[in-house]
Length: 80
Picture 1 (cartoon, rainbow, N blue to C red):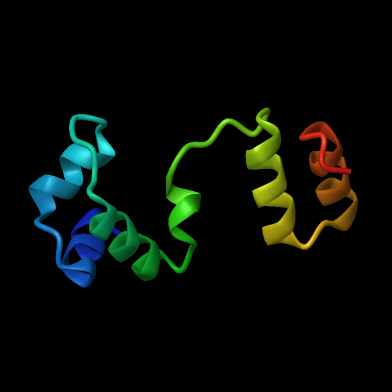
Picture 2: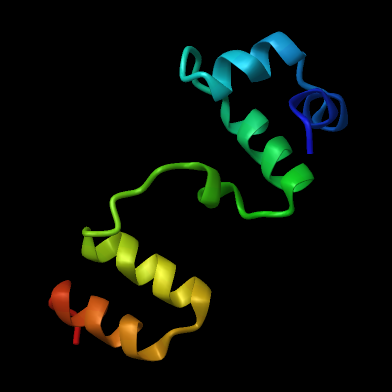
């Protein structure tokens, strides 16, 4: 998908999308959700999270339905 097509489909001005993509501007929460919807991904997939953090590992494992990783993340959090 081109940047122009994504901007048009998500109703975001192309210059703004270009600034977001270039790291010059941060998107608002509604923009993140609009982009995720058009890209067919979860909004959290567009936001960088540190997968070394147990809470993030837990969320990622639960989303992927990886029971072994869920148990490991819960252990790291002291909850199992």
